[in-house]
Figure (cartoon, rainbow, N blue to C red):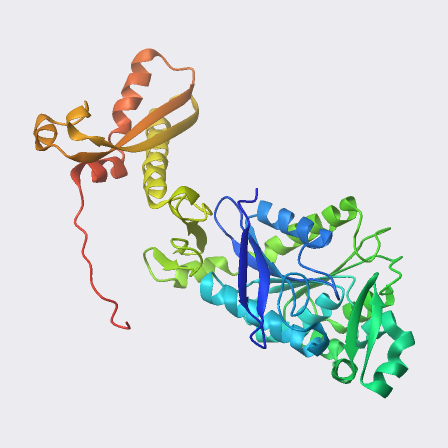
Amino acid sequence: MAGQPLRLTFDGHDGAELAARLDLPTGPVRAYALFAHCFTCSKDVIAARRIAEALTAAGIGVLRFDFTGLGGSGGDFASTNFSSNVADLLEAAAFLRARYEAPRLLIGHSLGGAAVLAAASEIPEAVAVATLGAPADADHVVHNFHADLETIRREGRAEVDLAGRSFTIERQFLDDIETQRIRDKVAHLRKALLVLHAPRDEIVGIDNATALFVAAKHPKSFVSLDTADHLLSEPADAAYAAGVIAAWAERYLDADRPAEAAEAASGVTVSETGLGKFQSMVRVGAHRLIADEPEAVGGFDSGPSPYDYLATALGACTVMTLRMYAEHKKLPVDRITTTVHHAKVHAADCAECSDDRRGKGGRIDRFERVIRVEGDLDAETRSRLLEIADKCPVHRTLEAGAAIATRADDES
């Protein structure tokens, strides 16, 4: 399930402000993906939306953005070329790396597919690349305005019609794209590759998929998109491609996580993302989560608040403690659910507090647990389980208080 998407901006290769959207799952973030849209398209094309939905449902955050001069991004499209698109992709990867985590999955549609193949070697953290309707040679895109090539070469530029819209194409675009060698990049990719292509694609022929697949080394996979058109304009086709990518990517994204977790420094690391007032990235071994505050207090509401995480710790510890007790006593407990509510109350109104605590006055933090135990249990056993809940280690820590030592990071 996806959380509230974040609309962001970052600087492109030439300093132009690029419009981006980050789709985050509602739970822990397993990994991040970077999506590159098709030639003259935008980040909001249907294929990009569907793929982002499928990946967030699988716990993967997806950053998609508009290349320079397109969609909501700044800059002049006429001054861009294939190399500048690759440079924008690298800036997007750097943005993710600095604010969250470097992308481990790269996805490109059409010319965006060729761009991610060209950029992949410069994103070492990426372990898998998926392309949709991608050309095997970047200069394939000139077929879209073949009739204007002579004018562009003679006069230096021309207005061309692409998908019903007018764009200025300059000679530097042609000069740049003729130097690209995508198949050479694929041959030395050293990352898992998934090639998705429709046999009836009239814009980029299926022979391009064959060329990419042959050039690639294993692990590589090919999936036919059957009757889909080049833009995957039918929602069912886009949803199918999205589901395939999400399922395929899982084995590669998680493959090196155990080793990464073992090498990770002990403890929990929380770093500001630099987005909004409060949003932070939480790293716990191989796990990635987002912490934030509600919109009402100035946050994005993109993740649980610190007190939500504290309540989560209490609830999780309670469930685990009761499960261990039930297993030890061989009790017929089917399922345990704990709901935790947190509030700041006046000490004088806290019925659960000791007389000494109420006498000190002021406001205190009050956590209320509502425990549901499903199973064929008598009243005495259920009452005993509530007593056991109080033995949860986190419960005891919260009641007793804890010593917190603070020191400066030597590297700061």
